[in-house]
Length: 196
Image 1 (tube, rainbow, N blue to C red):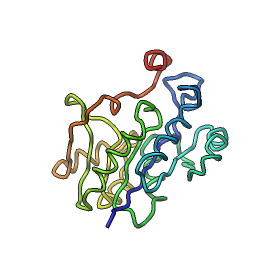
Image 2: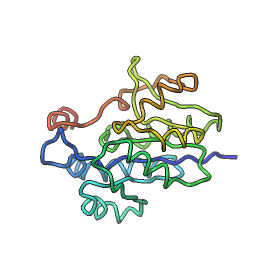
Image 3: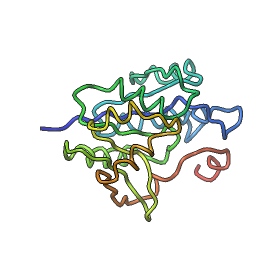
Image 4: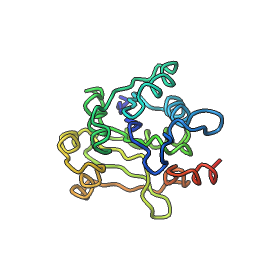
């Protein structure tokens, strides 16, 4: 039986390092970066995709509406990344064996990348955290099995769920990834110029 996993795409942030511009609305390869990322995940071997929106949610929702992807609003988006993870986990299908937490500002990841990581994630329903690495550098997306649902929902550090990982190192499985797509996020205008 094929195990079902839920991808949670974090697209609610303020893009503070980009200044006044929302980087997710910036052009990447001829389309807004958020649309590029959503399209790649939807073309991957993913069972469910939930896009968590917040900052400029009307604009992003308008862009994504034609794709049919499910969006959920994080009303506390300005409190940090953790609240978006929690919003996505709460909205995920109860039948999923886990959550693939994805960042919306990593457009180098293509549908094959997402499929490879998703297939590895769903290979077992055991309790585990799965994280890709390239040249010993940990990357994204990160998979949490459903055993960590309450840990994620109860996590209080607003900046992300590194604490959930550090508290559960016995269940952390790092695996070598064949390319550096898992490391490249776009935070500045220079990142866009360098990675066109």
